[in-house]
Each structure stands twice: as C-alpha cells, then as structure tokens.
Length: 148
Figure 1: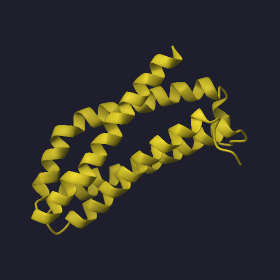
Figure 2: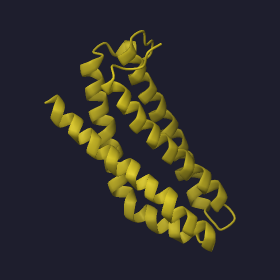
Figure 3: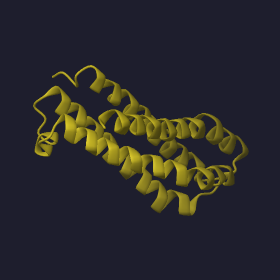
Figure 4: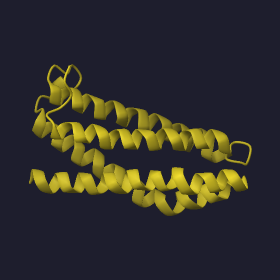
C-alpha cells in the first residue's frame, strides 16, 4: 500500500512542480514582456483545477506517509529524529506555500494589472521555489531524514 501511495504522491508532485516551472519559466516572462496580465490569468484558469487537485493529493498522501514514518504526530512539531525533522520541513514548506498562494488569490490576482504584474511575479517565483523545495525535501526521506 505504501508504494502505491508514494507513487501517487510523486505523480502529484510532478504535476504541481512541473506546472509551476512552466509558469515561472515560460508563461510569466511572456506576460511580463507583453505587460499582459491576461496571459497569467489564462494559464491559471487552465491549470488551476489540475494543479489544485495535485496539491490536494500531495497533502493527503503526504500526511498518510508521514504517519507511517513517524506514527506519533506530536513528534512532527517537536522533531527529535531525522525523519520527524524531514516531516516538519515539509509541513513548513506547505504552510509557506499556503500563505503565499492565499495572498496571491485574495489580494494580488483580483487586482492584477500591468502595473501589479511584478508583484505577481514575486508570488510565482516564491511558489515555484517552494515547490522545488518540496521535491528536494522529499529526496531527504530516501536518505533517512534530516540529520541534526
């Protein structure tokens, strides 16, 4: 069962991180060059359902796997072992992603214009870097967690 959940987690991470890399490296530069917020909005509209579904799968499968690796969830918040520290790192990345994404959804995207595109670019860069951080933090589990 663990292997199937892990495979779903990795596939969802591929969709989430890959989508944000496409956004940051191809869509965003075009939108900035053209000063056209609609380019970003069109990408968001086409990617959002798939991307948010992938994130939901990552959260659900990640929590399940974390419980398998560190069954006492209270240790996630007082990590004394390498695997618990890796779980805590993933949770911190998730919290940071949620904060940046919420700010973008509630404050930036509703007011998106040519003038606010640079602010949106910072949000895109942040979420993209956080998503790459998720992937790299996931690799840490393969090697036994985060050493002190």
